[in-house]
Image 1: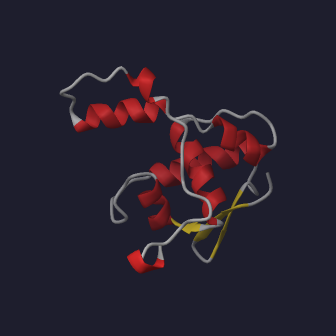
Image 2: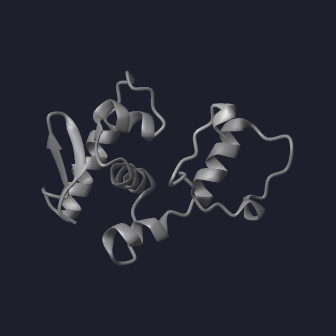
Length: 122
């Protein structure tokens, strides 16, 4: 691999998607394809691993928890990118998701230190 200047990741970012159940017929608009893939995404196994018990969260909250878990900590702009937004986008999606998660699991669930969000006490 080194002669190809390639890097092998220890833990690739994968998500279980059953492509057969997407019911895709050509032609399909890219946004429709994205919506179908997102609705078919199954992160329940990883969320169960993080929480130690089967847990279901709304899509954005689940993606945020998984991003923080995998990264160990992210800034607000990095979280926006992880959720599919441009870093300079004016959106309160990240703030709202963090607020909802803290309300549900406690203030110490997501901690902030020097502008970096991390998973705290689960």
